Image (cartoon, rainbow, N blue to C red):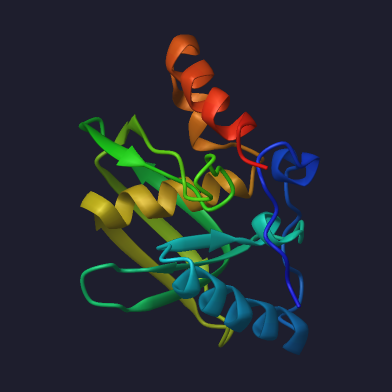
Amino acid sequence: MLQMKLCGDLILREKCSPVEVITSEIKNNMDEMVKMMREQNGVGLAAPQVGITKRFLVMMNPKSGEIFKMINPVITSRSEELAVIEEGCLSVLGPDNLPVYANVTRPAVVTIEWMGDDGKKYAAEMSGIMARIAQHETDHLDGILFIDYLAPVKREMVMRKVRQHK
């Protein structure tokens, strides 16, 4: 049974290593991560958030419900155009046990390549909320949290709420 890691857990700051072989354990972990993501009304979940330092994640298109299971995802291009969208994270919870949200500026469009759990290679250009989720989740694989993009004052406001979560 996988367990959600929360802000302050050092595993969230580790750079994950590539998946060399797609094992049944990885496939099972991804299936369980999809379940956890849905149960917590999330749209993405990366391996380090459940204590695994390997490069894989799951994400969902909130409009269509389509699930993406990405192994060794790489963002190969980012648009110069930026977008400001509110972000939250299942690992960054406030005193109400719900994600804390803040506006984050990121590229509006990205191209991402990955391997599916079927071993096939995929690539997609994503914009809007999908570009946002892809960037947020791939950041997790490099030990980066959305709060790292916030100005110091805003980050402190978010962290004050996080510290009240117990």
